[in-house]
Length: 313
Picture 1 (cartoon, rainbow, N blue to C red):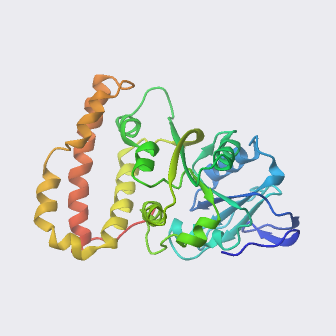
Picture 2 (picture 1 turned 120 degrees about the vertical axis):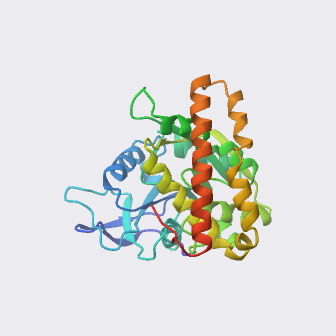
């Protein structure tokens, strides 16, 4: 990992704008990959400018992962934000590109569609200063309206259980904060993966004895997907990453995968004990979970036998 010296003159490019500035070494580097997402990215940048943590103590590195895309007219970068490009497809390749130039002793990861809480960085840094090595922050879903679609109900029931991820030794990179030195110990993300790279990196970190803590006060807000098309796109991306990691294993377990894929999702029954959902919401979420499971089984088999190709979002 390359850490730049203090007071480096830097050339920042945002597609069709170029700005020259003097950079003082920050304490935190916030890394945000983006892919054809300028409207939501602007909201993310605005939220980062509203942090309670002092602006001169952190930098933001945005990584544009769309080869031909450029920032729209009027898109501006605050003085502590810079943008680079990474042509290799995948958010993990984009994050690795940012790691090479990040100056902070602390690395904070979020996504372009996320809106960090105003206390996000302050709370995360406090956790690390108190002895944490790796923090999985809370991902709070928000919805378009108070009347939820069936997909939003499903998201409310199942999406971004960071506490569960942390207990399993991982964290979604929508809200992950850690010491930069750990990437020197563990290595970068596996940029061959289009999905699941955060889980894979978390397992390697866990193997190196780096413990992860769930922090409910370290909050990033994430929009809930609201339609079937968006959810199926996500399922294809995630499955593409899983199957690509070990195609031989999946082919050997073809019959077992097929049988399991046809059975109702037994583990999902625990959602009926969630107090924040009504019985109707629980029932709709469970039925949609069963549909997604069946769809995922068919798509997984198609990937295994070369009838479909891994996708990215």
